[in-house]
Image (cartoon, rainbow, N blue to C red; front, side, top):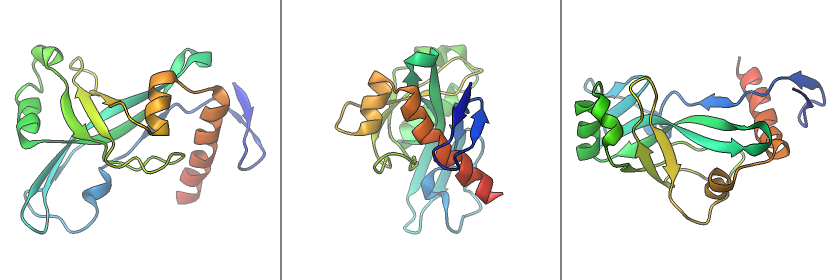
Length: 170
């Protein structure tokens, strides 16, 4: 699919539907020896000695016109109990039978009002897939768009600026 970019005015080929974050927004700052950040999990101790736990999952925003979705690889917080359970079942097929884990969205997503701390459910998936991140009901544009989907025009509004942001960072 070719599309005209609202940022640079040029035509681009293909729609990048996958965007990801390497860490939760809170990862910045000095780290302790026991702090962990992998492609899938994260935990650290803050300055007052409290431990925080996170898991990376995928938040889908349907794009019905494309019969596809915009996919954000984002982080959600977890309680210590939920984090321990996720690790216990990491390689077990039974993890798909687990009820969702409660969390808080832990990344700021461009194109929306602040998304940090939106309530989430972390739904574990098959062993070869990251968990799904499902937002709780509420009054936020991202919640509405995850539930109802977005148009291709809205997708382009989200993708165009992000493509150029990444290009400028290189």
